[in-house]
Amino acid sequence: MERCIITAALSGVAANRQQCPAIPYTPEEYAAEAKRAYEAGATVVHLHARYPDGAPSYRVDEYRSITQAILAETPALIINYSTGAVHIPKEERIAHIVELKPELGALNMGSMTYAKYSEKRKEMIFDFCFENRFETITYFLEHMKKAGVKPECECFDTGHVYNSVPLIDMGLLEPPVQFSLILGVLGGAPANPRTLDHMASLVPAPATWEVIGISRDQWMLVSAATALGGNIRVGLEDNFYLPNGEMASSNGDLVEAAAKAVQLSGREVAGADEARVLLGLPETPDRTGVLSESESG
Image 1 (cartoon, rainbow, N blue to C red):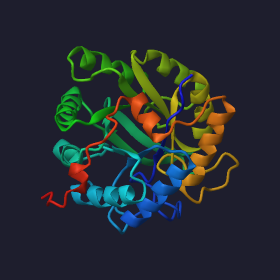
Image 2: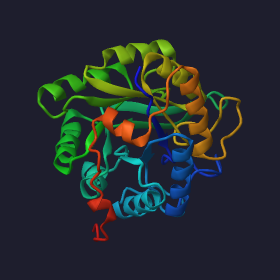
Image 3: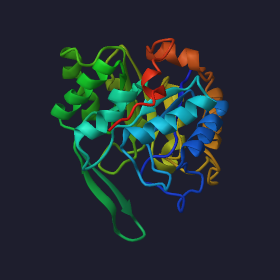
Image 4: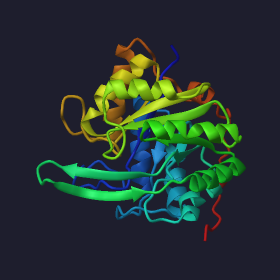
């Protein structure tokens, strides 16, 4: 079985420090969290940008500042940018990828209801319609291809995996495709190993895939993915808590626990060079966009 790639999703956009004090806001804090994650075994960092006050940012400037700070500390890391956003024009959702050219760009593979329910309050905490029509997906793919960025196909349900088939046939997605199978979001696939096994079986070869488990179910799904031969993503975007129920003090804590799960499965954690080979990425990434000081407008 191949070595296991660990991705760290450092912050997300929804959570704040009232919920988890370790969530980074400033470029310096992102850099410190990325370094902790890398030293614990992560080779990919998934980034949502924020302003220094913690508010979500979709601007190129914040993505550039955060990425520059991260690479100054850990230049070997593979950079993955989000494109996920609600009520944000598609042009703005892709602008940072076009200009800064990360190795990986998240590509949400279908529209969905995206919600969170409180059993205690008996009501929805939030309830969005996350739009990702084929028109939007195609637009993102065309821009990623032009920028030399590999798509990371984020699939919240089985139909999202199948949506890749026509895109591969059109030549917009080029094998080996990278899939992220996301379980545990209300409106998408439930968080259990049987569902993960089914979704993984639908991934069209040749491809690589990772699991993204939301909330405390993350650890059950991490174990399942390592047994099935997949890669894994952990981090404060998805879950605050360690397997023993304690709140993590950093992304590094979560990655360390994930690395132990990989080793217990009989596999080994991939290093940065190995991860680039497994993902089909260039040995030397193009950093010209992110290192440029040009104005993004």
